Image (tube, rainbow, N blue to C red; front, top):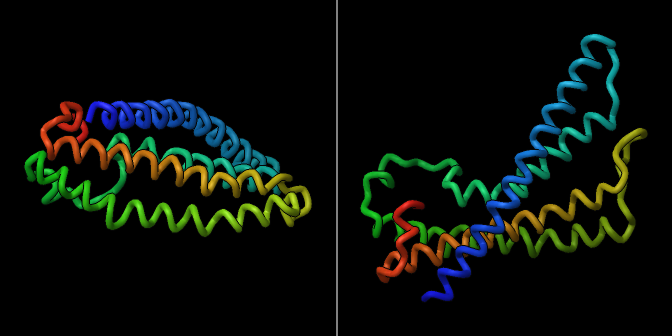
Length: 176
């Protein structure tokens, strides 16, 4: 059980570090959007590169921030009943939710996105628009990578829920 707790701590630490790094990318996204708005409304011009950079950064933030958000219980859900339940009941819901929804969903996206990413890498896919961002294949590689991080955080949640159910995890109280 101690090994499982250490694994959960390692996963939590990894997603914490990645989440904090990704938070700085949001500052870059705000700057890019600001520049795009200024160019569009003050100078009546816009660049494909800037517009693509906005959604590339957003996609990166969304994909690499999902595990961090799960770690901090920031995903949207209906908490009317969940918050009123005991710690053990919440652990059961999290454990079953991981098994039924999170693990299969993440694995489905990871497995089905790999050929998509491989095809993109095979041709070194760029933007189809003139003046667009080159190396679109790098952004597409973020899809399975982001879902691996999300899956890892789900594994940590599963471990912590399991340890709570067997009475071995003191950290679960803070998470639930």
